[in-house]
Each structure stands twice: as C-alpha cells, then as structure tokens.
Length: 487
Image (cartoon, rainbow, N blue to C red; front, side, top):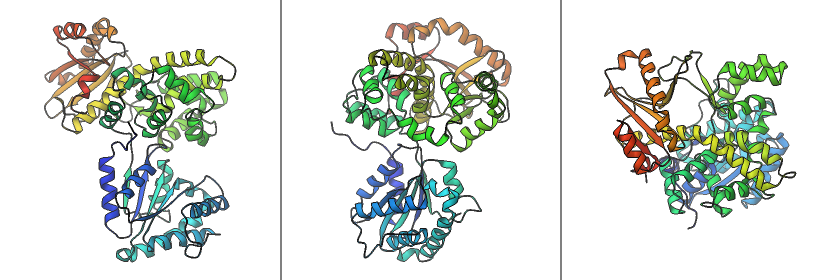
C-alpha cells in the first residue's frame, strides 16, 4: 500500500483555520526534529491549492550562510529576481519576507531557533518592524509567516521573552508532539504489521515520529523481521538512520553531556545520587557539575525527563531521570556502540547484540506505552477508566516500586498495574506486587476506602494465563485489549 499522511487531524484543522482567515498571521510551530512540522504545513497548504508558498530551512551558520540559503531557496521556488531581489543583508531579508506576505505568499522559516544566536539580534529587530507594520494592516495582507523550531527553549527566548524584539508578536502557536497511538495503529494495520510485539519493537525505537516509520517503508523493511529492520536502518552504508542521533541532538551538545546521557539511557530510572556516583568514576572534573548539566538537559534541551512518584511534591528528592525520547534512548543504550564497530566486526553479530539490548530496553518502553495508551483512551472517552491525572509510578527509599498507578479522584478509584514484557513473568511477580501495594497504603492510608483495582499487563497474554490471573482477582489486559476502540 502507498504511504499516506497519518493522523494530525486537530493540527490540520487548526492550520486550516489560520490559512482560511485570508489575513496576516505569524504562527509558531515547535516540536522535535523529524516530528513532521514541514509535512504538516505542506498537507494543510495542499487543501488550499491557490495559496502560493515559500520555504527555507535556516542553516546553523553565519549571516552570510543564511542569506546564501535564502537565495538558493528563491531559485528553487522560481521566484522572480525582479519581484523578489536576492537579499544581501539581514535588513533586506526582513523586507523580503514582508513583501512576500503582502503579495499573499505563505512564508515558512524552518529551524527558526538559529536566529536566537547573538549575531542575528539585529535581524530580529528588523523583522519586528516589518511584522508590526503587517499586523497594523492585517486585513489587507493575504499572506503570513510560519516559523518552525525544534529547540523549544530557544524559540521561547525569541518569541516569548519580554526583552526579545519579537515578544508577543505571534498570532498562533502549535506544539507538535508524537503521533497518537491510534494513528500508529492505523499505519501498521494498513501495512500488515499490526502485531503487539512488533508494535512494541518499533515504538521502542521510533515512538511516534512519523518520518522514521516512513523511512522503514521506503527501505522496504516495515513489517519485516526485527534483524532486517535493525540492519537496514542502522548498519549498512546507506542506512538512513545511522547518523540521525548525531546529526539531530548530540551535535548541538558538543560532547558536554555524554557521560550523563549514556548512563541514563542504560540505567533508565536512575536517581541524582546514582548519576553523581557514576560521573565521579568516569570524570572527577565534572562530578560537581551534574546538577547544572541535568538542569540544562531537562529544561533547555528537554532530552531528559525527571519523574516523581505519584502524589509526590515537586521538591521531593525521590525523582528519577529518564531519557525523554525513545529514539535517543535506544541509540545511546543499544545502537551507538555497535554501529561504530560496523567497519571492524561482522554485522550479523552486531545486529544480534543490538537486538538483545533493545529487547532488554523494551521492558521500560512497555511501561511507558501502557501509560500513553491509557491516557489516550481516557482522553477519547474509550474504556472503563477515566483519569484525573497523568499515569505515574510509585517508589520510595524502602524499595517499594509499582510500575503503574492510575487515579480517578472523582470516583475514588485507583488502579495498580504490574507490567511485564514477558508474560510468563507475571505470575511469579504477584507476591512482590501485592506487598508493594500494601506498603503504598501505609503512605496513603486515606485511599484504603477507595475502589482498588489490580491489573496485569503484557504485550500478548494467552487464554490459559489470562484465566489463571483472572481467577486470582486481577484484571488482565494485553495490547490487543487496549487497541480496542482505537483502531
């Protein structure tokens, strides 16, 4: 089956509203690289074929490099030099953007965050003047400006910082996240690979980044065995994703955070003290900087996520750190070292070792996937549990750990989940699961009179095991159960 544009219905609807106003707009779209920001705009513009557009990806370069890139884009889009002279200064670039908008052209500046560099401060002032004039005559301006960015904090500094020239100038904002599970299910069903274990394999690698699934399709491995996918996508000379992590986020970090990122990827759910101890063993010079590094990785780059036990206060010291993005976690935890050895070691051996590591990492990915599905089902009114807060886990310093806690405070219901990638591990783990739930209620005794539910999760659960667990009072749900209603 041919590849289609999947999901994004609400975002397309929002963009169509912007475009159909037929007046000036200045819209910000943010999201991680490869999440589909450009494709989203292209899709929306295809619904309004009479709109002319201009797109340029801003390079991380000097002003001369940016101007050169704009000139190349003008040539690519066959823009008449008589009408749209090639800019030779940042002032003339700002005026060019304004002229295009006045002429009804939809202008898209991708990787707009690079204008946050000090050397572009004057451009932001030039653009501010043009934007203010366009806004003052908004009803007569039939074009508009989209600015796309993949580093949220730098986009915020450009457009939301009170001291920034472009502060409070945007008319619309869209934050583009991962594709919903329902869209992934539609995609995999249409390409004949909707099988729970296979979805977990792909989701552990690609999460909801549509570009990566399309890459698999274009390389003719979507639906093929795991080893074929790993080899083709990461280990061959023409593999499309073998440099993706380096070109995407790691290049911007300049090697400053390698030790921390590698450790969090491989010890998912580690504490601050775990990180300090690890850094001390590998780099005594950097051990005092762990707190600052974490603040940057969590706040500025959003590559690391700090999670707290459910109901914990924000300043608690019991937080755990996770790599936010599945692809980065899989790369750092399983792929980067084998991929770098591909010129010296038989690739088949490397693929096997990589797959073993990925299967180990799928345990944590499965816990995250269950939470994402529950939240999506609740948001869409599907299923039997309405959430009043995000899915979380629970742990304490005494060793209590519960994978999944779902709360419906309105109806005083609480649901505890025991998540296992390997279903045969469910029954042997139930004694510990029950003990941890009892200890949870020592901390939250006021919830003992709530409706308490206990669930066993695995990717696929056979009927015999399902009946055994049900007879012991557990709700049993596998991915096929949770897909119901979403696809």
